[in-house]
Image 1 (cartoon, rainbow, N blue to C red):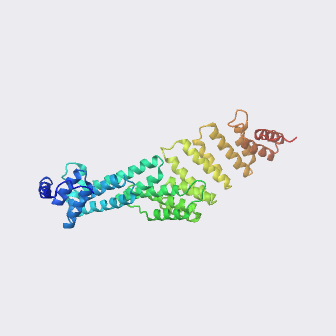
Image 2: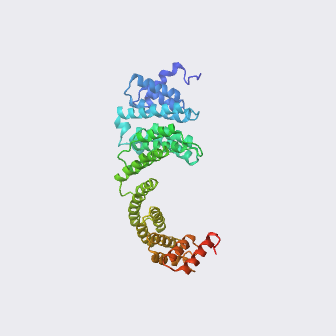
Image 3: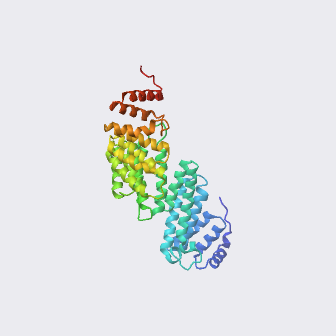
Length: 403
């Protein structure tokens, strides 16, 4: 049992001294502050609660009780690994800060006459302080790959400030990490855990704050990923489409929904969105040409797989302005040659591929280019050239040339 720091007969003097040093605070609050300064937070907490028992509207008692609860949660309970007790105290500290603002808003909610900026919003500064400590600790643990502990601290941050953007940011990171943890490598995902995580995402509310659209997208994308993991591709695709309908100019969404359509084997629909994305990317001065080319190359591949050969030709023509290296130019030539071949435009296929396969060409060792080249030569009756091209193709593929 802890011994009292002061003998009982000295209590009246303590109360008198506390009233002098703490101005208009009650004796209970003034005494609690003294114990708090001495590091006896357990005793300080009891005194602040005693003051509130006598006067529920004692704003300083609420404020200093909040400070004490936050300190004990962090430096006593968390230090001992008692997460549940820390969670309870952080939640109560938030409520006590709110009550301090309620009962004395001019001092604890907004005091424009305070010299220091943090003193203008005393209660809010207290809430932000305990939230920041938990959130920043979570970020640190996440970066060091201690994900279970990171989840704990993000959850505690959400308890420290269960409002608006602060709560959203902490809860979002917690749920995202839980999703990653629910997908163990080489094992079947825990469907019950995934459903619980999905419920958490669906409960998240995005308010009217800066970057609200981006946050809303993060939630929908996370929900779609979970639905896809659970095998509900239709629901996942529907979520993406709904989000795109609300943000039709968003390049990131255009790309995401295009990919979803590809998974759904809607190559034509994917092509439509990819063209729109390329339109936006062409106008973006911050993008490099190699980034534009890489996405155009994916769009061409999608069109080819979907047998949209005229569309693939148009994309290849557009991508020419972004192609700088020989390999990029060779890719476009091969795409044009293949598209022309499939469209039975064999002369044009030959013309497209000659700059690739001839000596000193863009990529004279490309088996893919030689294959379409010799097949196109055969179609237009250039049999000797076709046979030579076939032999070269087989040589590059390591095949035996037939006599």
